[in-house]
Image (cartoon, rainbow, N blue to C red; front, top):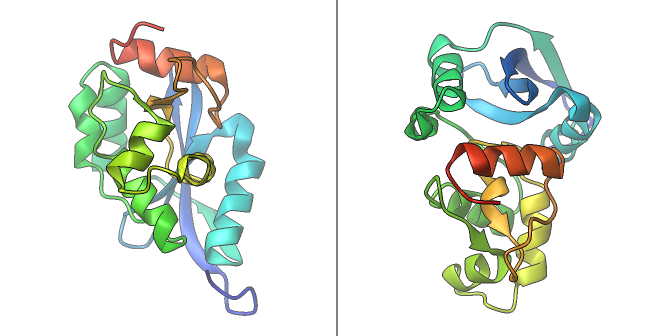
Length: 175
């Protein structure tokens, strides 16, 4: 994590209309996605950015065309488009491990928090996996919506359970 006494890190901020609300796209000078959240959760997104980067300077800019194209394609039904988006995260080594593992869960499938903990060779870290999942700065692309309760229930999604239900349904998961 960065010190808040340094110059603020500059990121671009764009908005993308989706069927489930405006998505906020935060990207760095290299055009790499750093955060994706929902407009109605902008405060939480800004707080996560602050926790991971210290002071940030978000400037309204158009996101790279490839990023917008890939995300629009996903929402139009080309689910594999997400794989083409370049992303970068900061956080603890454990958080980065969880977030990287999220990207390996195929669209159209779900996994329980316990199953993800087991995949990480940390079967007792179910709560820690849940906490890291809840701090995921890149919604949809790092598909935290694909994690469900051990009993198959929809639990905890930072963008709201209705969005989680929509995303899973969009990917062909019966919810």
